Length: 213
Image 1 (cartoon, helix red, strand yellow):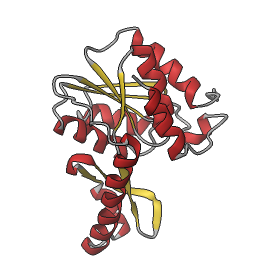
Image 2 (image 1 turned 90 degrees about the vertical axis):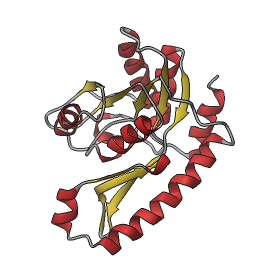
Image 3 (image 1 turned 45 degrees about the vertical axis):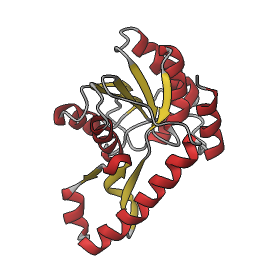
């Protein structure tokens, strides 16, 4: 299994791939926190603006690693009906989790931007970058947010993705284009495809955003 050294290396490789046929008027949006170091390298390769697009997974209350959906800025919300039904999640449980995660979205958006104006996506290509895709719920919410903010085109770009999630993302039409460097058939977890997958702190993400022109 080929593994990336770290998120920065993965971002440089992803940026090089996108630079082969750069999209028009790009704005690179990292999904905090792990997607920001990757997005910083992509933005540098494309000489594009770097911003964040804050999205939070809605985890099943008694098994939070399992995504029953996601929420993000601009009131975006994506649910996974199959997971909700299989897990027997009640409306009250869903509402409680969603309320908590929406509060976290607002708090994080303010912390990462430090008062900077949210990027205007109207008529632009929104390039949504994360360090990988497992279920696709979070990136689906990110696509919905970008479209709600007027993006002319939405591109999802990640170093690695679960093959079913990548295929479904393309077939669903949530994104206009999907760029993935590795789609391993034996995919188990995003972190397994990095030698260094240490957690990205808020401070590191904020500093990367500060440095971006």
